[in-house]
Image (tube, rainbow, N blue to C red; front, side, top):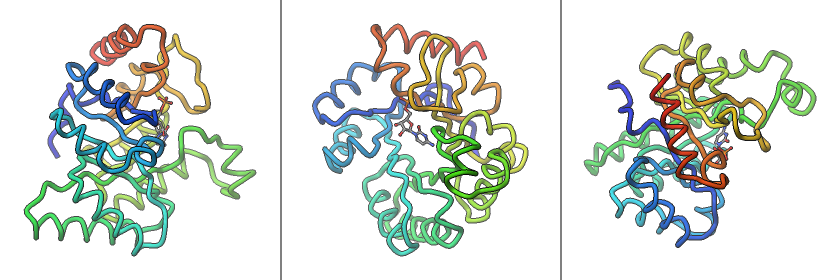
Length: 242
Ligand code: C5P
């Protein structure tokens, strides 16, 4: 797999409901950002037209809908995401190998048949808002968080997916287990000057790169700052200096 270009490493999360505001944001940051993330809030309120609209700006879309359902349903959703022409989309590794594998196979087949670019398919491991205690006390997972992330990443690799979404705190363990070509996308990014909000396993941009993250997903640490452009600049500098 070719290395991720530096200009693509920072993904901006469009965590908002309004279609017009989302596109204004794309326009405002288009000199600095190549990939914009469309998540549950924006997709649910604006629908698939938001993806087309972002593509019209010449930008790529990470469709972050975290599919998690029976294999057939997720496979059909994956085909719909592929037809939208997104650059990457994700599903929960905890949906199991059959779910992930059927998705991948169906997407590969569709892309060959219709001569489309194949989107990168990523597996969400353990959400960056969860802790070791949540896993044990609420979800009944007895082994450690890193072990669980490694286990889910191994399942994603077995299913032939392109990579995972994880905290950069687990990037090194995923890299060691899954090798160099496996993509690691890390949300939960917080520079030293921002609060963690609801994220628990946060990492600074510099540390994330050093730990081996390929992509950094950032939302509030840019868009909720008093001076978002300055915040973006500082984060870009941090990434470059790493
Ligand atoms: O504002 P903040 O930078 O915390 O936003 C992180 C974004 O990454 C949100 O859109 C969230 O849905 C997403 N995300 C996450 N943890 C994951 C996968 C995606 O925080 N494991």
